[in-house]
Length: 332
Image (cartoon, rainbow, N blue to C red; front, side):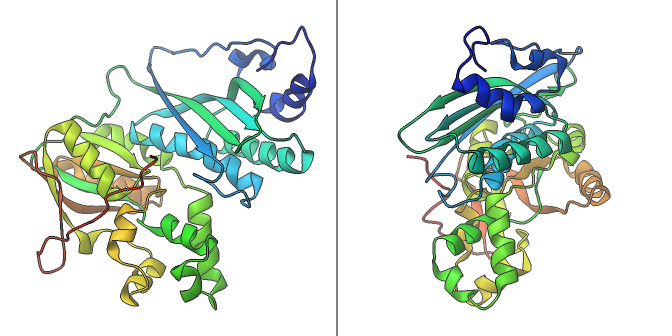
């Protein structure tokens, strides 16, 4: 992460906070400016995501949650590809190097490297006068030729999604003082649960092997279920119909919809869910659902892939198409 021949404040920062996380032999204890990742005969899957203060997290978010989110959004991508985590490199753009921020950040990151068996391999630290930024490039392993891409969905495939949709968007609304914050003002448990979904994603890496074995196409839901399904369909050259009533919601999200505090579109397009969205041939959908049950992750059928190039259709309980004004979060 730095030049070990010219000790500096950066070297000290790395040695103090991040060298203990570099447990893989190929990281060389972070004394080199490169690492070695053994392929073990597998394909190496590479994914990268950056999170920026004020865009992907709030300046007031605790540093431990920022660390977890930075790594976990990348682990979510690996899970959707059917890959097992192998390691990651980290780039930090920091305004300051205060121990009160860096220590909980590094401690939480270290805990997650152990939880998900994904060691730090290297990276870089720089200073910035602007918003802080954390960028991670993660590496995963899959058997040769077995990565699950976005292009394999075929007409008749079932569309499945893990977990629940929309909670993270509601958590952000709570943190920014929106309608959800007002509606849940007297329910601190609900507020805490939704905020946690926004701050700390739950990547579905325990399902990676099942996704690899059964899914024809997959991606994680980062920018919003509606928009991400649209991307998957475009990559596969097809379309889809979704039964919105079957989209899995938490009890809190469903209650807010029932009270007209939020609309379904907010949940479908809000983003930050970090669930796995995949398509599965009909004969294999039950197997993926059962695999989810085994590891304690709900997997729900929400629709079907259909032929054609039209935008996916989202149907209400009466079979009428919902006119969604927004499909996903936009970075620009």
